[in-house]
Length: 115
Image (tube, rainbow, N blue to C red):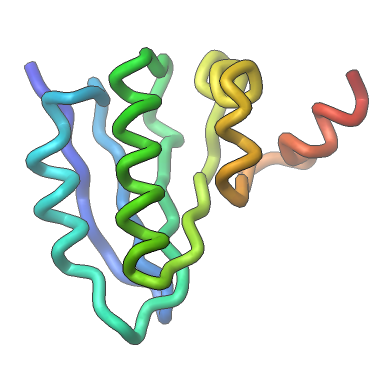
């Protein structure tokens, strides 16, 4: 079973919605979706709200997506990491490489400062 990535557009932002399971088997679908980026877009929102877990392969793929976004002149942003995914992002410090929209009342920077 492989996950997928769904591309959509909201104004000048590209949205890449991650469909679990997310890992290396998701690579072809995510790279196909990334081919739809164009010069009029300024942000890549990677919606991880559906993920309940994130392993090393998923972390690696997030880094690859970030690299592709930056190479295309887009600001990479993670949208709505929850629970374990949010914890893994903080422990791996990947939350420092992305703008993170937690989708809640407190973002990851506020959580980090409260610890």
